[in-house]
Length: 286
Image 1 (cartoon, rainbow, N blue to C red):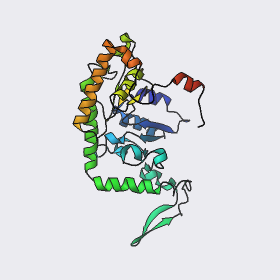
Image 2: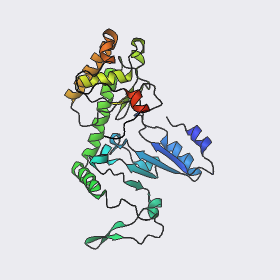
Image 3: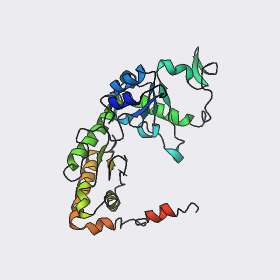
Image 4: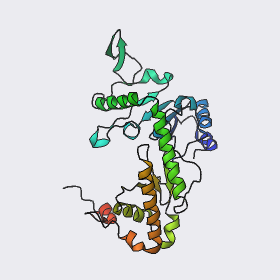
């Protein structure tokens, strides 16, 4: 979690600002973000926010009012667009009024009943190389936002509810490093499974045998043996309950038949990879 005192100690004449993710990668809301922003602004700095976790706060938090000067939106995480090779991906940047003069060109401006592209902004950083490349992705995200309207807030509420439901239903069988309500994702660890020499990776591989795509593991890096579960707003309660029941069964297997987990997955065509060899001797061609 962000410490206002530590930020104050680091902000000097050589520091341009701070980049934050809020909610953070632990799935927790940075409660003291306003205090942090005040410190940064008082010393001439800017606050830039990674909008990776906006899925938790749409229609709930006004980023500008909590001190954010600029934020990029990960459209594939929040606004229904493809990611990477299925894209191209896109991350539009939103800024407060005092940064508007520096935005790239061309800009879409209204000209009577029509729209035009305007280049005449002397303080602009210039043209972005991929301006035309991701246009379709931006339109798709904008269409999604228009179609959802006020229900965007409901989507965030469902995402937060689902994550906290999982958190409460698994907290007695998986270690919870931060015992407080989460936002759209909850982070567990494999601490309770250590006596049986079962790791986060073992449990993730075993989930595959039950037909579940494993959640993010070993991230964030500040949590040893991290298991990050992010159900999003789209999963039904039936699916979430099935996932919870399966994970609980896997923790029982860790105690009673740990070899099942160490040898998982067994159902898919492709079994567990030799990850050490893959890292040391990567095969980079077909």
